[in-house]
Amino acid sequence: MRRVLNCGWKQLEFEVADNKLISHPQTPNPLADPSAAVRAALEQPYEYPALRLALTPDDCIAVVLDEQLPRLVELLVPVLEHLREAGVAPEATTLLCTPSSSPQSWIDELPDDFQDVRVEITDPDDRKRLAYLATTNRGDRLYLNRTLVEADQIVALSGLRYDPLLGYSGAEGALFPAFADRETLERLSLDLHLEPPGDEAWPTRRAAVETAWLLGAPFYIQAIESQGDGIAQVIAGSVQASREGRRQLDACWRHAMAHPADLVVAGMSGDTTRHTLAAMAAALACAARVVRTGGRIVLLTEAEPKLGNEMELIRSFDDPQQLYQRLRGDIRPDTLFALQWSSAASQANINLMSGLPDDTVEELFATPLREPREVQRLLDCGDSCIFLPDAHKMLAVLE
Image (cartoon, rainbow, N blue to C red; front, side, top):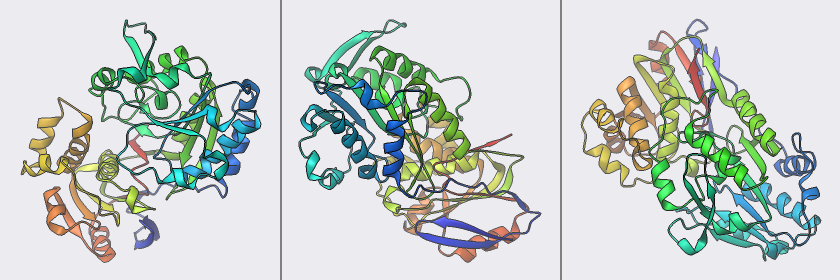
């Protein structure tokens, strides 16, 4: 049986015997016109009136923007057009972003009509740019970005993904804790999880839901990514849309396997500049849930991600099990990559086909691969296999 797995911009083909293949989940196809999907979602939200009906020309709007979204400008422009059609002037709209190491090149792509829209990067350390919102049921005092708190209407344009802190990102999770003060960010960053999210909301997500309620009635525009760099679905609305978005994300990207495989082949497709070490570690963590203990994971990407300080932590350990044991009791954002990677390497042997040098791959507790035929040899030798397309977006679990 011929199987195709996307690796970066390439399509790789493999031959697998029918009796060896446990699963090869399908991934959602991209929408032909994401802008049209956003316009439709704004006019007909999920169990909610159209956004423009809640606006007046005097309103100040805070648009929370997820800069990790692919095709960001195509998704944002319909939102800005909708606000303008409701009589809201561009200068009364602020695009709120979280701090990022990436240049905001998307700003230059906005049409001239929206050059007066303000762009603000939140600063969790600047008390003057924070405002007290309320005290939570737990007795925590909430300090959030001042523009967010003082806005007449909040619109969150965000990706809906699986998240180690919130379980599900997007909607309420796009607002909190992302726009909180430094103390809150540091306190909640210790509540990261490696296990998959379930029916019960994780503590940070419950806090995000309460915070959104305290902020009033935020309007959510949630984009679910497709394979590659596309958008599969757009769901807009308020609280009900948040729940529906999580259901749709699971329908697109959550896949249950009957039993683990000896070999899991995980792909990462699309723009390789988006395939960071963190994304690669997420793909390995996904594969590790469905590989047999002592089995093998093959990760396929053309990426050559930049290596940061996290590599020094990995280089200080010769054994992935030792590193995993060192980190598992104290999960932090700056060590999450190393924890996920070492956890997968402790569970299975890792082979990596990427743009990284061989010696770097070996430092990552992996064996380098250079050609698809090397993957084919591993498939020929294994007794069972699972293919995971875009494993960094997927949630693979055992039934």
